[in-house]
Structure formats: structure tokens, C-alpha cells
Length: 192
Image (cartoon, rainbow, N blue to C red; front, top):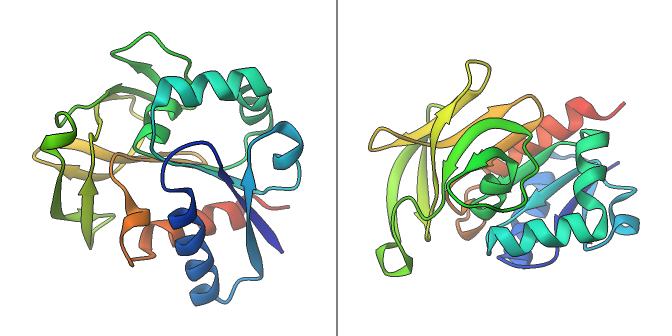
């Protein structure tokens, strides 16, 4: 059985939990989700989802609780959406705590402020997908070993490096389990 942790601090935590459980069921995988807020919470998790919110606040929480060091040391798979993508990057246009697990530079609020949020049909990993962008960042630079999973208007909006997946938009706000299934497969491949 696998356990997917969902950071329970900000963002669409419940929505991530619902779509992850739906994906597990569709894939017929014995798994569950668990809300994570402390170091003790994550110990039995095989992967972690970090959702949207304010990335500086989330980053400070990760550092304060010891989760940041734990995530870096253990290498458990992480799906970061919106603010989670920012946290996974090595650099951003703001001075803030980062996990630095994806060799990328991210522009926070790259598509504009709240009122400039939008939805669009995109290609994700060569599949049709409905992207929901809310104060979305984009990736301005990547290293050669980072795989691009999606672009919008020539801007990189989804990447994968090793067991880390960063998404600029909000897959938890759709009914489409494509992205969560990709993450679950990554988690499964890392479970020994």
C-alpha cells in the first residue's frame, strides 16, 4: 500500500485529496492519502503533494518544521502545483526559502495577478488537458536534465526532474486525473 501525503497548510488541500483518491481508485492501486503538517506526519508517506498558496509562507513552514530537510534528505517524490512548483525550483525572482529539487528558475505570478487568472486547453505530456491558472508562475529557465511536460504561449508550465514534478496550474480543480496518475506512477516506481 502507498500513502500520498498532502501538505495541509494552504491551497486546495481537500481537492488534491479527492482527485488523488479518485486516481488511485481508477488505477486500482492500494493506496491512501494523508494530510501532512509536521515531520511526524510525513514519516509513513511515500510521496507528497504541495499545492498552491503563498510560496514564501509555505517555504518558511517547511523550514520551521524540519520538513524541508527531510524532503531533501529522503528524496521522496513530490508533486508541486503553483506555489509547490515555486518551492521545488532552485531559483525564483523573490528571496524566499526553496527546496531546490528541480534545476529551474521560476517567475512567481508570471502570468499576472489574481484578476488575470485564466483557463485554457493545453497539451500535457502530449495529452489534451484543461489548465486552470490562478496567479500562475512559469518556468523561465531549466537545465538540460529537466523534462518539459507542458508549455503555454512558449512558456514552460510543467516539468519533471527525477522524482519531482512541478506544475504551474491547478490540476486539483479539474475532474481529470491525468497528472495525479502520473505522480502516483512516480511514487510507485520509488517504493522499494
